[in-house]
Image (cartoon, rainbow, N blue to C red; front, top):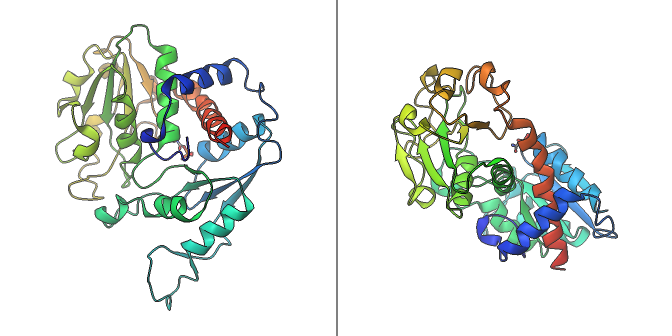
Length: 315
Ligand code: CP
């Protein structure tokens, strides 16, 4: 594996699962793999899980890590080639990425969607520019389009908790007061489509995701119908893709409640966190024994360590 920015970077699935199993069994089993090497985690946006789990994973393999909140102390980066840089942006990504790549063996970067210009966001410009100019492996810590560390985590969690070979997995939209990117939902579908799970997506009209991610996935605007006999319910808000970045509704009709969970096959509840209680999901669901949010978040370390090991093994 050369970079880790989408499911398409996985070259050897059996090796991925062997690494996951070894990391789960003994996270400290390869304490010297990262010795003498260092990683820089660049954040343009807030984070709790990604920031801490990736550092924890690095610690487990002896990899030094620096976290750089680039908006607080870094220069504003110009992303477009050929620009006359006479505005507020002081440094071009060509130099910035190459310089960071000369200091560190791995670079992680988080850059959310701006939700202003769909074409621009869906080019994943910052990640692509770092891949082009850094000269070292780049790890997406959530781009404008995808969140692959979260999705690997989700897959590891479902594999661990599933009680049948082909569980029914439902991705349900939920309300939220603010406009959120589509990255978690896009990425979840991209990863789930590599499995033979029964996969269903449900959302109100107007919240259709890009066809690049939903192709072949059963979709319905009837949440109750989708929840019937579900084994896993993954809840997430996203803003509209068609009316790009717009919040079309905020009423609580689509909140996941305990009543709705009764339609399921005693489903496990999943969410990437952070989650707004009693807006996205009721306390009764997230506090129930069917909620996986804490073990799911714990597997962020498993996923990050797996990715770091595969990248370091590749040299
Ligand atoms: N799920 C997730 O990525 O959490 P953070 O935004 O806190 O990193």
